[in-house]
Image 1: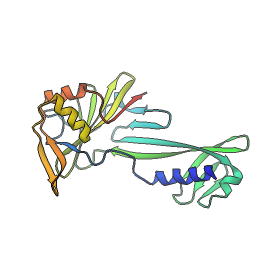
Image 2: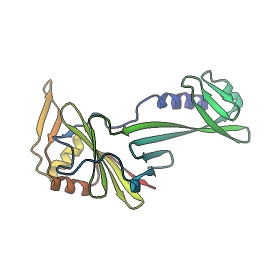
Image 3: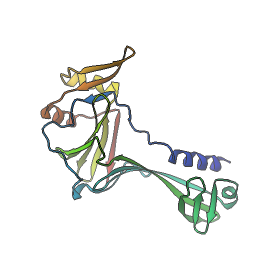
Amino acid sequence: MKKIVLFLVATSLLSCESHQLNDSFILFSEAQPANVDEITHFPQKYIGEYSFDATHKILVQSKYIILKDIDSLEMTKKELDSIKTAELKGNKVLDKETGKLYEVRYKGDTICWEMANLDTIFSFDEGEVAKLFKQSIILNKEQENGVQVSCINFKGLKGKYFQLGTKKDYNYLKSKFKTNPTIIKENGDTTNVVLTFSRGDFRRLLREEGWEFETSFFK
């Protein structure tokens, strides 16, 4: 029964958005960094798949950046047959709700397969601006009150992906920079701070570590 529940949870997660920082407390008044040209595609040297761990990856393609989450599942044929939303078809498992097929392998009497959730986090869509700066890809997305910023920093075969940011991140920034933000309030509560940074300010920001939504990766 536990394996059946895991399958149902996994299929449910595949239809949900990734746990991204979608409602950033920190916004910027313009795409970052200031006075740096936009790019229209990602350079070949950055294209590839980078791993946060065995089941979480980030894929950089010419025109897209995608987060990939992998769920590894295994169960007996009897357990799989008891799931109404799944069916074994040859060497594949069919998810009847989505129509997706997953390749299987066998470990004795156990059927094993992986389910991948792909979440496009950047695609040069309207309101999305990318820039290259100091061995980093800077991703800018227009929001109602400003620009949300995230960064992919490369250091050889390693690097980090971080998003700006939370209230905790802002309190950290205040200790390092003269922020002088524009405060956005709704019903008396502060919903956003909008920062105006120079190119030099942003260069200093890239050297900082310890952001709340920060993850290291390797190739």
